[in-house]
Image (cartoon, rainbow, N blue to C red):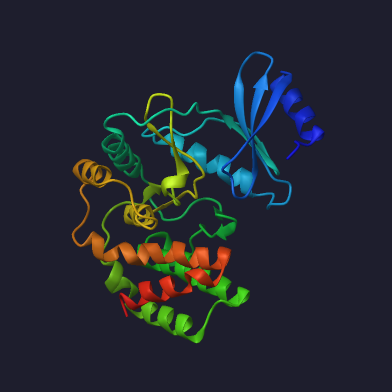
Length: 290
């Protein structure tokens, strides 16, 4: 896809550099991506999409900046952003280091130790191209099970109803989940952790030093098990990742029992993004508990 000349002119003006090369990159499923070469030999990464919400790239920039506050794990530096693009540091990709997943697990645990006093985030953002509702109301600010059910599961159910994916079985199943949600999630006495929000194998890259770098976040503060549950959804990471994580920041008892409740949010989101192929998986996750 050819980059709009208006964008090129704007970038050159803001950067005070001429763009000498534009190379399209593959891999993005929502936006177009480019490697930009400047006349000072610097290379930057650009994502552009004029048809998405004008909040999407702003939210991505804020999410990356929030992750960077923890100092625990590398994220691309945000150079510039606007309604229809985000310009980032270009991470030169390398090969995994010998202890890649162990180091990754420890760094991820350290990131989760960066905490907030309340659940959620100061703004809503996006999970894929669907909106993710983060601003808590009332008891949701301090009650994780209430925040998670209302802002994650119930919101996705309402979206499924709007899109025509919510059968009576799905509605009844989630109604039963609501009755048991506090029992399922249990007592949480940890402070809300900084979460990537959408961590799977496609949302990290390996940098030039062989270490993990997080990309494409859906940031908020929540229970860290929600992040780990997402990592298990598409096959999971290596056992070394989870062993190192648990050594650095031990998980609460029976955390594996709660994995499916955290997978459910993302499966419902995929149902709403991609259609009925995820319906049976959502029902099976619900039936694990009710």
